[in-house]
Image 1 (cartoon, one colour):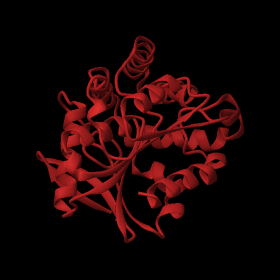
Image 2 (tube, helix red, strand yellow):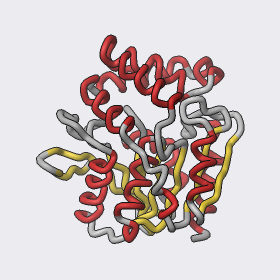
Image 3 (tube, helix red, strand yellow):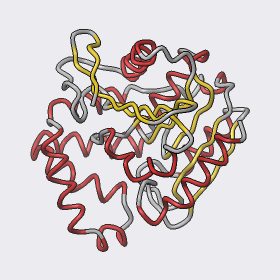
Image 4 (cartoon, one colour):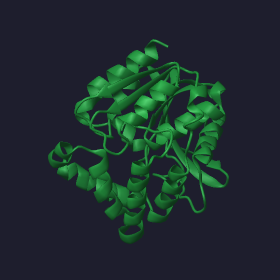
Length: 263
């Protein structure tokens, strides 16, 4: 466990393994712990830096307006503090948005991108879903948010099969997040729009989407693939928004390792 102060705020991160560095960026209301399920598949070959984005996990909560550019600047400062000139970046959902921003804002820092279940702008349907989650945070706190969020990011079959694990996940979500901070994170997401800028991303990019994703449907990934010239798209059957589920790890890790080792 390590931490760094950025703009008088604490950012938590973990730095494990050796080799080519990979930066891991999680999604909304998650933390660096979401990567534990796949770390064993990567750590023998790579150095893994996983951080709790501002407002999440063990990092300090957000008290004023924030933006995806601010998240990207936090990443830049962390990488500079670790004397890392260039990294591969894997971003899931919100983390994928931050990864895109970093690749545009600081292209010299990014060797390659892996964008999982992400988006480059907010369309009407995603806007409605995010505002719905904000309303749940306002009226019912993180517990009410979690109850609705899992329906958007996981398949019904997964929810039925892993009910007890999801109950524990709800407890962790409530312990590690505050409603006020997550509301500000969603505000940042709602203002995010790189639709006309992603074509400038030149690094090798792997885009991965779940065929059953109802939160950020596959059209977001297809548009990214069309926009980013040096990109490859993989659509995985029988999985929703959250690709980091046990049944999907063997195939997902194979995709990631093959991509990284062929750069």
